[in-house]
Image 1 (spheres, rainbow, N blue to C red):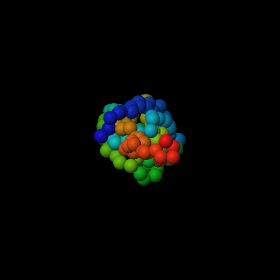
Image 2 (cartoon, one colour):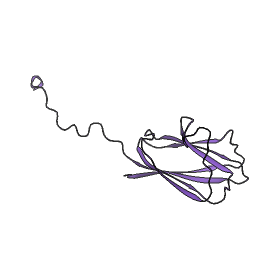
Image 3 (cartoon, rainbow, N blue to C red):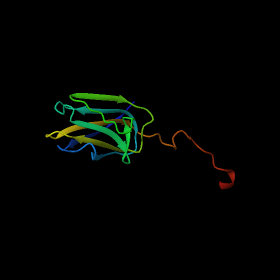
Image 4 (cartoon, rainbow, N blue to C red):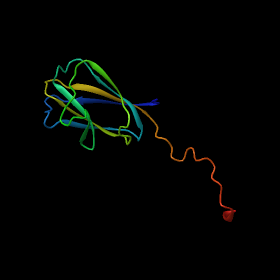
Length: 128
């Protein structure tokens, strides 16, 4: 279960072509992503499309070249086994005449501490 929220508001300027979309870093410390929430306010009417990516490559949706296009919707995606390095990107276009702001939230939790659970490790007697 998530114990932190990383939130980003990204404004996509009007006239941003699909062929050369805006790429915005969504950077946070390394965390396990439990859910992704994206708020698309009313107004885009099919003129705004977006993807989530990393290192310039597309992650969501999984079909390369496909964009998510919606209007007046809050999308909730419970996810597993996604990037945990905190180096996400929003890749978006806006073919309309008005700017549109999308809010992207990552519901995350801390990475497990690799040292946790080791307990006490006895020292060799030669070191005593």
